[in-house]
Length: 357
Image (tube, rainbow, N blue to C red; front, side, top):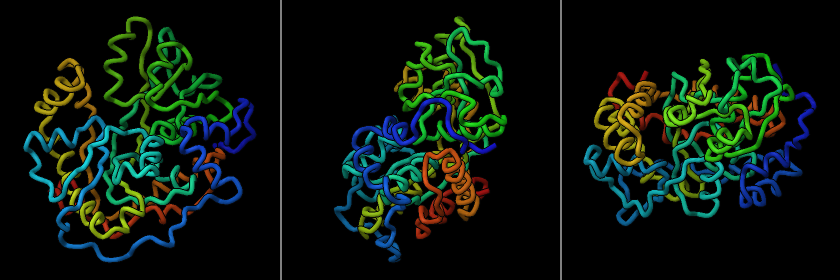
């Protein structure tokens, strides 16, 4: 069902957008897209072949949310990087990543499919350089304590935590569409994902999509008070690496990004193949979870999949962009401009055949 009906929830979509992107993105992005389609200028995107070797002295500022990649390298499981990492930024939320890109404080980031769409809408040019396909849901819909909501159909008329610039937002929109609910059948509350738990705990929202890694701790604290989760078959297909076009136009940095992709891919494979070690070293030692909570998270983990071709990813990204456009959140556009095909296949070549299909 389309999301393009006139809203009855009282939320102006442009105000809604600025409220969740933060001041920097709101000023820089919205002022640039108010009178246009907000298409990013891609004319300057480099098509030069990637260098075979990273030049000496090259460095990257990498977003590794919760420093997972940094930890893997410190554990000695991935080998030494052929370039310097000047900072491992603990930045994961899409709006925060876009702001960091704009500020020049980040060169490459790991996100879902929606942040590149959001950046394009703001007029900021960045490209996708690596793809990992997820087949199982990596988000659960959590209820506030004391809730009697049992299915997505029960979301009608309820207050739902919604971040249009993050994966959680598109998972929610896809779930609503599958349940036959339109945008104005619910009350979308503009928040970023780091606000979801507080909003649930306080009853500010009835429902929030939580990552599999968040749900066990939330239920441990509030399950006895009536909080529970609602499982769906909705997946967020894309786990990706992306970088500003200005970074990729720098031949040395582009070579470093290409060299980083195999570490990113192998790191996900290693964590998947070694859940006992990863549970202890990451979730227990750095995230203060119990071993049982850690095991519950890794039980839901997706098997990494790095396809040699990006065709499925591009199709999915287009569907996502079209869904957001139906709701009036972005302008309709061709997402093929978001992919830098010079990097296609690098991740696939770095892993065993069973992780390519």
